[in-house]
Amino acid sequence: MDHFNKLTPAEAERVALLLEECGEVVQICGKILRHGFDSCNPLTDGPDNRQLLQRELGDIEAAKDLMNEAGDIADCTVKGFAVLKLKKVGTYLHHQ
Image (cartoon, rainbow, N blue to C red):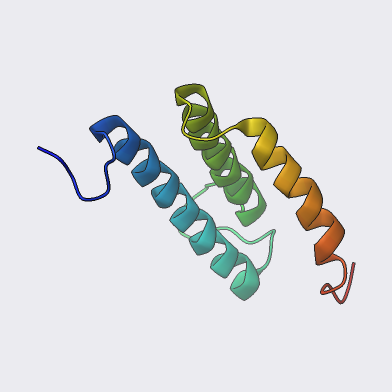
């Protein structure tokens, strides 16, 4: 069957993984803004928000690596855009 987006099941799976991991980063960023980096769930002996963010960013890196290895994206292109973003974003940051 030809899908409207022309993605193979493997491509769709990798995009879904990236989407899920990005959502988890958004969620932990909300917790950091509400409670701070050093806060953790008071009902468990789990990691603090900083550790959770690092874990989730690592998960995004893993999803990105899978996409790079499969040829969905080119890591060198992603890194090039990161360099451009760092040059451009400074204009809009207030506290850096």
